[in-house]
Length: 251
Ligand code: MF3
Ligand code: CO
Image (cartoon, rainbow, N blue to C red):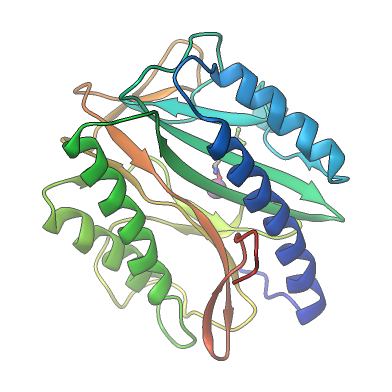
């Protein structure tokens, strides 16, 4: 069941997502050769506390950290570790919090120093595909219009969308209905309505869409070892169209 939120609730979801966006911005600015993903995780926890929030992922179904850090061929849910980031890496930072009863959730993929042109292109197309999806989050549209727009943009560039993981509704729970696949034909699924709050999160692989989960039970990697990128925004559907809530300046 898709829960529609009141304006008051959307204010709170906005506040949570602005905190997420602000923290992601700080984390992004800290990414550099030699920095470890565990240092980023620890920083995310400190900043979460300073914002009167609690990490959303830590303990969620047993996930052991506050931040997901997915480097190069890691698709999502990578564990922070003590390996220094290297020049040329790309790292996805996926972060969520709970604040005043409501969740925020967003992700960015960040370049470490100078990266290859193909890696840059993959990141750019993935970010664009998120915005293509968001554009379709309008009243009276259908859920799969979002999915289809993401898939079309990604595949037009020769990349593939991951099937195994999806976006989701968000509110007083981190994961609510509906599930939001990043693929599918347009014009199906639930009808989109003002008051829906959605986390849209394309995961895009440079080559095949297949993923494999490592022994830790979480880390998802590309089956073929090729690069993967991930961007996520939480948005609200309003009468006037989509509003991105996970922006630090509220713009
Ligand atoms: N953005 C991801 C999601 O919505 C992050 C979840 S990590 C988990 O699924 F640990 F919380 F599962
Ligand atoms: Co999410």
